[in-house]
Image (cartoon, rainbow, N blue to C red):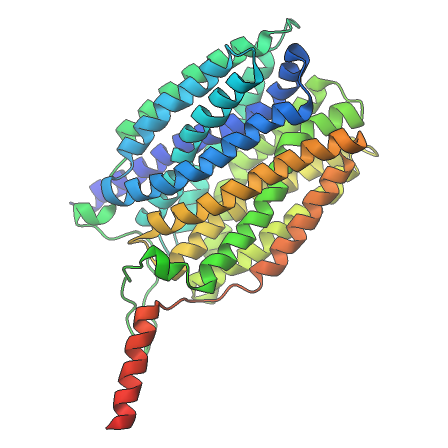
Length: 439
């Protein structure tokens, strides 16, 4: 395969990941807008409505683990195909519900299966094709599908709700079902296998340092990887950020409307700014991240640096969000900074994990990590956000909870190690050392 074909395949992988991320975050972006009308029409509390989203994230996490194994073995196409079917059914089925149990099944289980197929597949497929000094840039381009979903689908959903009909949210969900299906079928056609199956190497590998031994790709077993601190540090860094992030995404619009008295149109308009800025900030922050890697000449160290900076921006954004009542400018600043945070942490933690453990079995390792993170973080964050509102009658304490969670994430990120060694290799080295002493 010549260089032009290799580049074409690489860009095709990026395009497929863009579509997958667009659909994944389409669920998240539209929920913040639809949960209010759903609650009013069905007579449910905020906790009841948010429970469906929280349950979706639990099944998302479980499915992510298995999708990682499928990805390592069969590639991305079958994963995206399953996601297309369940993604469309999740929205369409929810548009028909009248009971809370049916809602938990359609939006919790079915949508959870679809979204769980998308995150690990999109991140790991990019990581397998792009490493070192090019990973963050290309992932930034792919991840721009997320803010595009937040910007574009927010307005599509808002327009579908115009007219004030109590059940207008049902028509919005049916429209979203069609969008999900078409986009993910396109991703199936664009997706490619792992580069080694074409006899190719990933783009962007850093040159070997003189005097340093050549790094060999380690065939990590999941049990071996999870016996090292690096993966647990990455998990805890991501988990605490996810708790904060998902609380903010699911409660932000409601905070402005119910606590500050904004109109829903005004709140959705400001909320969509995160998506608008993110379309540009994702690729730009990706370039910055790769520049940091080149500057320190060590990918793990560069990714760690960005994982410290990421949640710090989350803390600052929460502070400006709390000042939204004093000035609308503060709300816009909060959205801008949240867009910067969003461009750093989700992809950065995959980059760090790939730098430490390599790409050969990254699907399985990151799949299990996602199971842990997404099974706890988003569920806990979004549920606590709704619960604190019901208990205190305000979203202010929810935002303080998110801020504290970002602070914990910063602290854990500072402890991340630069490498991990399999137990089998440690034993081999110990055996060699003992043989040397015996000799």
